[in-house]
Length: 180
Image 1 (spheres, rainbow, N blue to C red):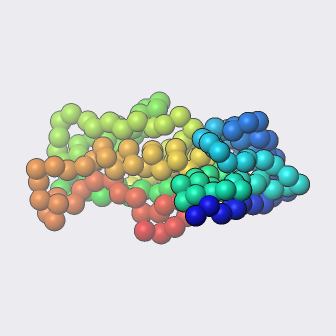
Image 2 (cartoon, rainbow, N blue to C red):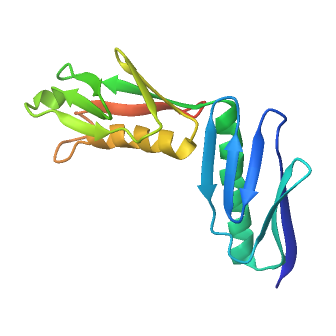
Image 3 (cartoon, one colour):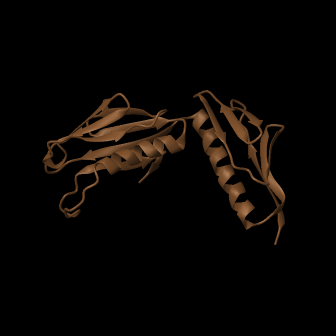
């Protein structure tokens, strides 16, 4: 059954938004983000301080697209107002491991006593700060900050060992302001 579904997203005063076709540019005090959306049959426009997404004859597929695009736009608006921050903890019980940042790469040395250091990439746009056993990742783009944190966790993934005994690794403890 087709319904008329529209979502309105408020644009705060300190944030500017421009729509050109399916491309949305958002500027704020922290920086600028740009993203192209696959709008398909949806209407996507800016009107008096609001972004309106919707369709006059929306099916359940269009409804999902509307909600997904609205969530992405809300994340973009939040990011340009205040950066997203992920915190990770370096846990080592068997061997003391060290973490250092070199350019756009993180090097984890002495993980489980391994001689070859493990490496993780830092996506462009993410800022990483290492303070002993706490790693802080900040970015205006939530997806980039989350991917950087996931790269850290994946770099210290343990296989072929019992996870109950070997609990070493780098783990997310705070995800975009929410405690885990």
